[in-house]
Length: 439
Image 1 (cartoon, helix red, strand yellow):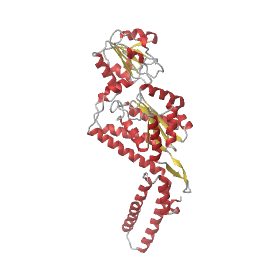
Image 2 (cartoon, one colour):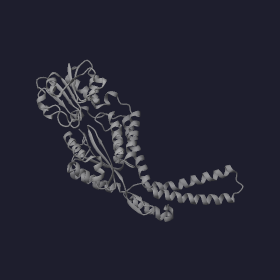
Image 3 (tube, helix red, strand yellow):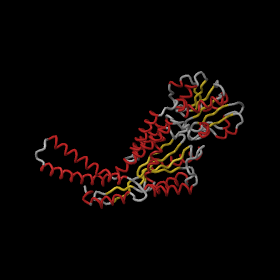
Image 4 (tube, helix red, strand yellow):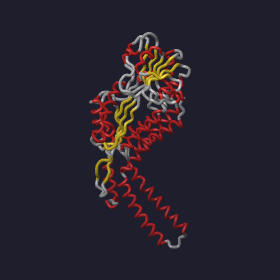
C-alpha cells in the first residue's frame, strides 16, 4: 500500500518548518495602515489508510476525542478556527492558524507525542487535498459516495459550534461544490462507489457462494446495504436500537446473550457500529468451518485475534484497502485532477485577496477619486458631448483604471520566496503613498 506521508518524525518536523518558510504569513492591517497580526493560514494535520495502520488511527482518534473540536481552538496556540473530518479511513484536522508551523507542531505532539504516521499540508496543498477528499479521489474506493456527505457534515458541525468562520467555512463549502462537480464530470461505475458495497462483494467472492445465514451487527448504511444484497439469506440482526427501519423487516433480531450461538450458525458476519470496544470476541466464533467476518467499524468492533484462526477469515478496513488495488488512471481522472488543482489555486487567490482587502481597497478608492476628478475636468472642457458620448468617456475611464490597477493587485496577491506579503504591502505603500491606503 502506498505511503504518502513521511513517517520519520524528523522528516515531518522538517516539513513543518519548511511549511512556515514557504507559505509566509499573510498579514492583515489596522485601519491606520500599520501591519497588525498575521492573518490565518489553512493547515492540515492528518492520517489515513495511506499513511498509517488502523491501530495508529484509532489511537489518534481517541486522543482527539478527549480534546474535542472546541478544545483545538481553545488549547492550541495560534489556532483560531478548526474542523475535523473523521471517517473509517481517515482522521484529518483542518485549522486556520496565525502561526502555521507552531500550530502543526502542537497538534502533532498532542495527537501522538510525535509525528509518525501523520502528514502535514498547508496553503494550496491543504486546499487541493480536501477538494480531492470530497471528490472521492483520495478514498479506498474511487469516487466513494459517503465521503462527500461526511465532508459536508464536518463543515456543518464546525459552523454550528463556532469553530469554522471566515476561513474554514468557505473552504468546506468550496470542497463540497468541487466534489459535486468532479462526480458530475467523471463517470465511475456505481459498484465501486461504496466501500461497503466493495467489501460485501469481496466477502461473497471469498466465501464462494451465498450464505444460508448471515449476522449483521449494527443498523447503519452498511447493514442496510447488506440486508438488501443478501435477499433470500436468513438474516440475524444485533442492535441496541429499539425501532428498526423497513429494510430490516425480514431480519430476526437477537440479543447480546445469543451472539455466540448465532455466530456459530452464520457463514458471514458484518459488523459496523460506533460501539466502543469489541462486540465480537475471539471466543465468540468457532474455528470449525470457513466463515467470513467483515469489520467495517472505526474503531474496530471485532477482536483482531480472530485473524489467527485457520478457517475463519477476518477482514478489517486495512485488509480491504489492500484488496481494492491501485486506482486505474485515465483521461477522465486526469481531467478531474486538473480541475481540482485549478479550483484550489482559485480559492487560495480569493483567500489571499480577502486578507489584503484593506490595502487594495484603499488603492482602488484613491484611483477612483483621481478618475472622477480627471473625467469631470475633461467633460467640463468638452461641453458639447451628447449623453451617449459622455457615457463612452465614463466607461473608457473605468476600464483604463481597472487595467492599470490589475498588475498591482496581482502583485499584492502573489506569494514567493523573494518577497513575502508584508514586504509587498510596504512596497505598494511606497509606490502609491500613504494617502492611497487611507480609509
